[in-house]
Length: 171
Image 1 (cartoon, rainbow, N blue to C red):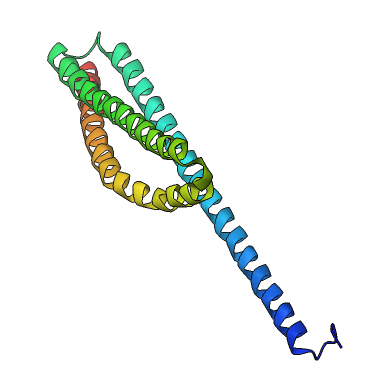
Image 2 (image 1 turned 120 degrees about the vertical axis):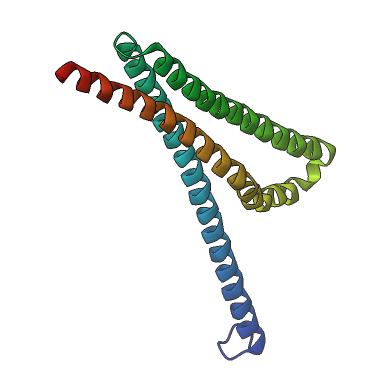
């Protein structure tokens, strides 16, 4: 009788339904992981930008307050290194905006040419996301090191000049 628990066809159908349910569950987990990863990357990038802009604002505020009491050469050297840091950061941000625009443009062009392959193109684009992040990682590390070194040098010059000013004031 069809539908009996012992029927081979019923068992095969139930087993297939179980596999499909497990595959759908796994796909949902992959989608949630991808969504979480993407969200974390964007959140980290936004926080990093916030901290960097705060650091630059604090530096230039301190620089403006100290320029009356510190030696002019020290102020110029400090500003020079900080301007290099800001320039590297700004050029990097522009480069990454251009890179994202190029990637989206390529995706949109392919989608316009073959709209029936939307899901296939979406999966291809999503699978390449991790590769794009890895490729950008090396560039980001260089940018991080160069901006941190130049801004740290600028801040160190200000700090040393301020400490020298305090020493001379108390001597």
